[in-house]
Length: 88
Image (cartoon, rainbow, N blue to C red; front, side):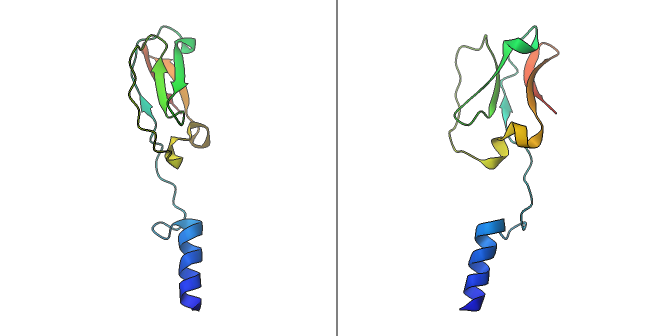
């Protein structure tokens, strides 16, 4: 019984696979055209997408992963070399 409780506690708190290891940021960028930072917008169901305000069609998967949290990973959606992309 104790072993089962320890396993369940470990699994629920840390995932046991990496004992709380954080996966890499997994947000996406459309690489859409931009001329300044304000041309770039964050979008998607979980704000995982860095896109251009000029983008017309967007397709995203709404799966709600922790690695989409740009703020937690220190990323911002910026205009770099005239393309919208995540920047740390």
